[in-house]
Image 1 (cartoon, helix red, strand yellow):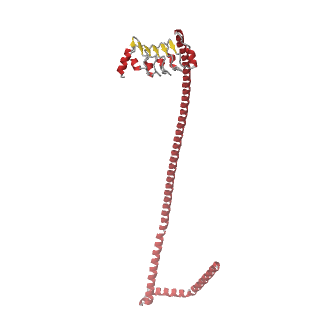
Image 2 (cartoon, helix red, strand yellow):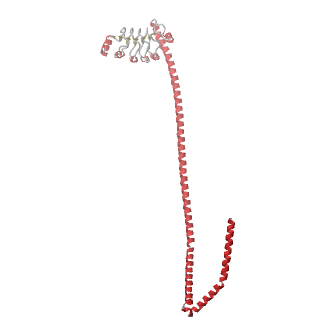
Image 3 (cartoon, rainbow, N blue to C red):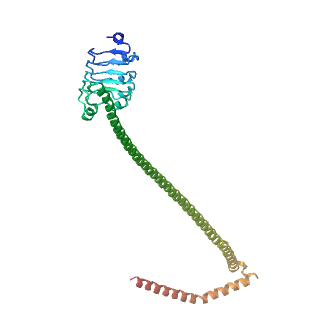
Length: 323
């Protein structure tokens, strides 16, 4: 059946502000079609096979009277309290055990029938028998009171739950803050340790550089001292050189002089110049020298013998000490 045919059939069942859908073998409530007729404030859905009401049923806030008797309802929508204009509700002969907590919000409700439902004891006691108009009105009043008490209990339980959740949230936040504080402190400590490490490394580097500089200065001073000592040594060594050179020169001059004298003496002694006047004193000096040398020959021999004896004794003592 199409949507247009459903609307047409529903239109055929409307009379004034009433919609009669009883005995239609319905298993679902045609909520969309009922929403198209906001002036139809009275709906009769009795004697069908409806097992539940869809959540959208709670949007039909224009409803004033609803008859759901003799169906198979086991529960009602949680938002049933949204039907703020509902005054008459017939739930006779269903399979309800409880009512939604929002039922307490049906402040306009004046008439209620809950007979022949397997209600839980507290709700059944509040509902009563509902055998006539007066009892059904009392039923609505007492059930609303009962449901308001349940609502209050639910609200208190919700408040307690919210309070517990809030306390738990505070505890979680406190733990989170403590954890963040610990992490922050740990990061701060790590930064301090890292900074201290860098400082130590910097100090070590500076100390190493200072040590290198000191070593460099000591090396330079040592080189300087060595250089000064070398200069002094060079000066000291260089000073005697002129002396040695002067002595050598003098020795050479003396040797030349001696050679010259020897040459003159030989010329005056061995050549025809020996009769010349200048050779007479030279020959006389040579004769005197030869005479002195002959006289000193014995002394020289004795000196050589003494030196040989002393050397022999020295060698003998040295060998004896080694053995």
